[in-house]
Length: 434
Image (cartoon, rainbow, N blue to C red; front, top):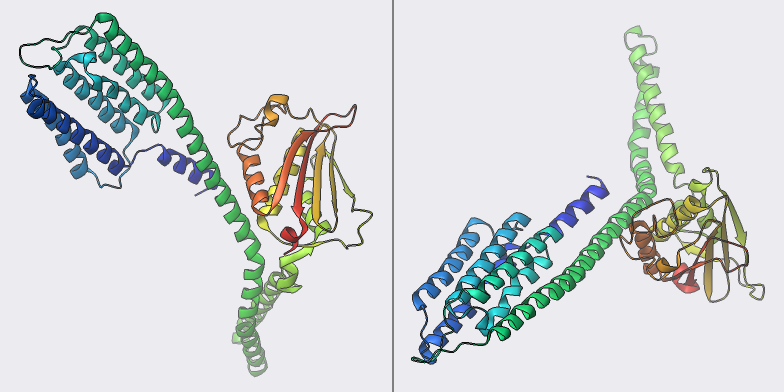
């Protein structure tokens, strides 16, 4: 399965509520409703349709039991089922409020709870549908409801203006809470999906880096049995050189053994200088390795070395870090994509730090995007530099580089008359070379 398919599947699952979460929340609500009804009836001795109220609570409890037996507790409900369950909860609570005074009941504010739960998992369309349903139910309760439970022989009727005020409070709370919770949950989902993508990319890069070691190990392990096979074939050639029946087969065996030796030699050449060579390389070699795949796209890439002139420290030898290689490659790819004719990579070091600056001569970053660069799914890719193409890919690159100890800053080129973007990556020398 491709990385993109895994990420999309994870993103889809992240929108589904676990059954155990929904069931526990509903049991909590059922317990609260039962306690409230019993307290009002048994302790306060208020008169209201007790039997019908318990019947409505029992229906909600039956639905909870049905869901628990129908699915496993760790099952993630599809969005349609969650929508129907939350819609039922709104209607059930509306029925209880109808029996106990409508919006005059102080518990009327609980009408917003199903919509808030929906805002954490459902789509905007589903949230709007439940929100509209809640407002309609609240509007009905303004006009139609049984009297508010009160002491026997006394009727408590609150002014209409007060009830309308409660309706406005419910509607405003519903809108504010729904929008706020949806935005928070959506940002958390996007961040989680982006981090999953980062982990997949890093895992892929680590697997690619491990291939050289695996090739060397395979060559080493297969070398001995192949040498034995070659020796046996030579002995057979000497013993049966005058027997035409086997000459062709022996020649075929010999040629195939030689072919295997050549394949193993090529595998060994992938790691010809040993594991130590593959794990460390000069900073200049690392930069060239990152830049090489992007040189043939019609954009000139200029590489300039600028070490600190006061420092007598030699060029650093750095660890081969797949995250650093991928992150730098992504930043250079973005620079090449948006450059008009030229991209610059300027690198240097001193006793304490290593610095790489990537510049292009494109349009640069738009002002309103500078503070948001590096956020996942920031925008869609387009033909401008105003955030296009700087969503998930740049988030992954930034995350991988920061994990290696880098500090990254984004800006537009400061030189007068020069347009384009400038990205600066700085490591503590020890973090990159340890």
